[in-house]
Length: 253
Image 1 (cartoon, helix red, strand yellow):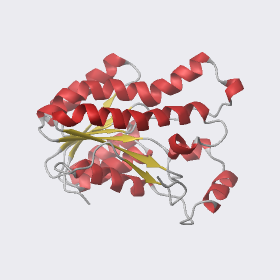
Image 2 (cartoon, rainbow, N blue to C red):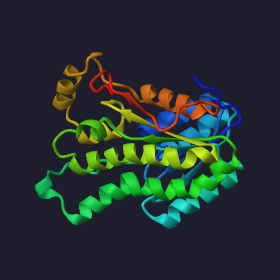
Image 3 (tube, helix red, strand yellow):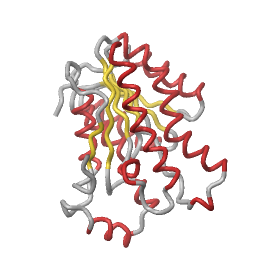
Image 4 (cartoon, rainbow, N blue to C red):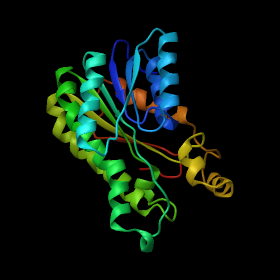
C-alpha cells in the first residue's frame, strides 16, 4: 500500500460504494480527506468519524457536481479545510437507469453524460491550480469495464460516458504533465458490494456474469480502492496517462 502520510485528498462520491472504500484506504495510507457526497450523507459521516478514530482529518461536503458553480465551491471548501490539495479522485458517476437506444431521449443522454463526464470537468478544472501548487500531485479517474467493452444491454449512454473518461485521462495527462500533475485511471469490472449493482444488476445476472470471469469471482470495493491508493501515492513515479483494468481477466489491454 502506498504511503500518503500528510497528503491531502478530495474524493468525489465518497459516501458509498467504491468511493467509501477509497476514502477508507486513503485514511489508512495516512491522508487527510475531503469527502464529497450528493445523496449518501450517512456513509460520508461514518467516514468522518472513522478518520477521527485513526488520528486523521476528514470533513464532508455536499454538492451537485453537474452544476459548475457547486463543483467549484466544493473545491474551494475542500482546499480550505485541507490547506491545499495533493490528490483528486474523480469517483462520482452513475448508470442512472438502463435504457436501450430507442428509449434514449435528449434529457436522459444529457443527464448521464453530465453525471459521469461533465462533473469531472468542473471539479478537475477548479482543482488544477491547487494541485499544481502542491508541486507533485495526482489525479485518479474512475472509468469502467463498460467503457472498454460496451457494457450490458441498456447501458449504452453510460458505457459511452465511461469510454470518454478513458480518453479524458490520456488527454489530460499530456496536458498536465508539465505542471507536475500525473493523471491515471482505474476501470473496474464486476464489483459486488456496491449500490450500483444492488440497484442495476439482478441476482441471476450477477451469477451469469461471474461465470464469465476467469478468476471465478466478482471483485470487491477493496480491490479497486487499493489500486487507486497506489496510483495516487506514486508522486515521483513515471506512471501517467495509464488505465489500470481490474476485472478478473475479462478484459486485458
